[in-house]
Length: 114
Image (tube, rainbow, N blue to C red; front, side):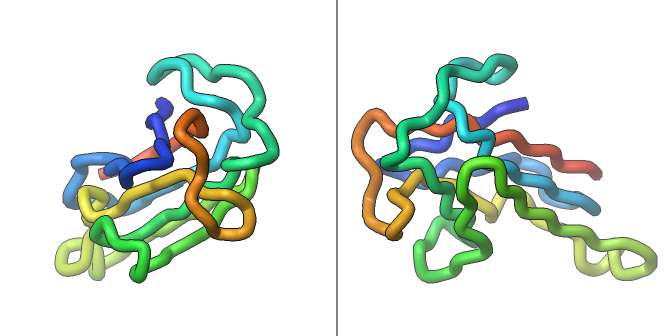
């Protein structure tokens, strides 16, 4: 499934609050729909910032096209410390970290497993 990673606000990747595994990938494609990819992302505005609690100061990853980010919790820790995906957001940026243009909407692939 794909999420629309936009430039002007952070997008929540999932509402899943008790995940054991989370995978987020910058597809390098423009967003078309939740199930289809668009054309290749222009070289400007092609990076995805992954943040915690919708804040650009709580950075988890900065993904170039094709790169991915993964989190996992297993064993007995899962009951006490699950991944709360509702607090993880994505937003498109230029490769140098500056704000992306208004039409830079990247398709972000994600998987959250409970």
